[in-house]
Structures are given as C-alpha cells and as structure tokens.
Length: 291
Image (cartoon, rainbow, N blue to C red; front, side):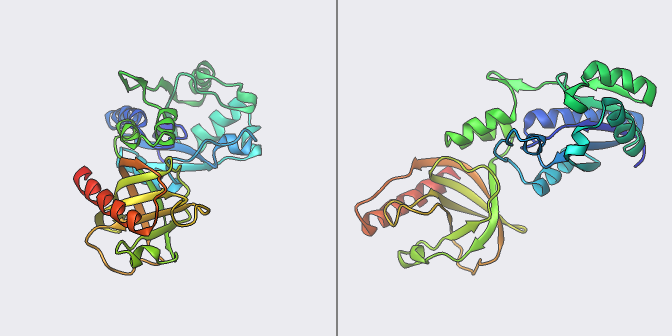
C-alpha cells in the first residue's frame, strides 16, 4: 500500500463524530498527496478479549461502504486476534502502521491505546512515529449541545426506541439489514402483507412500530415496521416485519436494508384481529405522514 494518512478506530456506526475525523484525515491526505486509509478491526477487540462486544450498529460490509462514502480511499480490516493483542506497541507501530500501511501520518483519538496490555498511548505513538517515519495527529472531537458524538449515545437512543435521536448522532437513520424469510402469511390475510426479516445483526430498537424506508438494490419504498413478539397473535417469537407501501412483489430471499425513520408507538396487545387490523391501518397512515 502506498504512502498514506492512516486513521485508526472501530468506527461502529460511522456517526457524525467519525465523519469529522474522516474529513480531517482526508484533508491531510489531499494536502500531502497521500492516500486516506482507515484501519479498523474485526471482530471487535472486546469480544476477542472476553469483555463482551457492544451491540452492533453497522455490519462490517456497511461500515466499509460508509467509510468510503465519507472519505476513505481504502479500508484495511485487520483481524483482531489474541496474537495481535499481544504485540508490543513498537511492533504494532513498525510492522502494521509503517511497513504494511505505509503510514506518513497516523490520526487517532487522544485516548487511543494500543499494544499488549494497552501499554501504548498517544505519546508512545508520537515517539514511535519519529523512528518509523510517521507523524501522530490527535483526532478532532465533534459534538453538539448534548456532548461529543459517540456510538454510546446512538446505542442509548436505539435502546429507548428514540430512533430520531439516534439519527441526529448518526447523520442518517439507524438501519437493520437481513434476508426476507417465510413467515406465517398472517399479514396478507388481513390486507397488510409483510416481509419478515431474518439474520439481522444490527442492534434492534425497543419493541414497537416504526416508520421506515426499505432499500432493495437501487429501489427505496416507504413502509411501516413492527419489532416485537406480536402479543395479539402469539406473544412468543420475536419478529421483525415490514409492510411496504404500494408494493406487491415476491421478496422471499431478498436482502433488504430497513432505515428506521420514526417511532410511531410501543407494542400493544389488542382484543382481536379486527382491532389489530384497524390499528395497523392507522399506523400505516401515520408512517406515510412521518415519511
């Protein structure tokens, strides 16, 4: 890989704070005629080290897509292993940053730690850079009236079902992605066919009904989504079901991304199918207005 400005981080969510750092790194790269390379890790270091990874905001594929969209020339995904965690700060700086990635500038947060037992910090990186041929630069911190933008703020908002608040930190709606699976076709019998999303890796919002945009390839459709256990029907199995407006094609096996635009209400139990059908009609109308 050619001479680069390397910015290091997990970048889960690629939120507005991450985007500010990417702009900073891209500016440095453009000014010096260098590539802008993001170094990220998979799986999450906390998972490998037994501390438990936080809920995922973006899949690796979506993370790479967003990083490129916001300024990265290349994304280097380093497999995080026990062996890598045992590297000394010196080895990390020389072998990975200098030799493999061709670093001329390395951009990290001021609280960045690296190497075995997190022994290396920003001062260590600065010292290592002097001998390895790169400059260490502290990442800019972006935020709003509530404080710095962070993945924790996004997760807290999603956990509360406050997807609009999450969007204000992400700079876009939080999304769920998965493959449409066969369900029990109950929605079609009451006039609201749904796509049942399986294999979702991203963090789910609290149970309830949401106005959504459903993306399939180059097409986007408005819709309404329920996340929950369907207490009126069975109350047992978690379902992620989206009804797409003005759409009546077979989606089984299709990969969808569902952007959560607005929360409409919490999950409720109704007296029966008739009351449920009437409420879904109201939800659909509210979703159309929200979109």
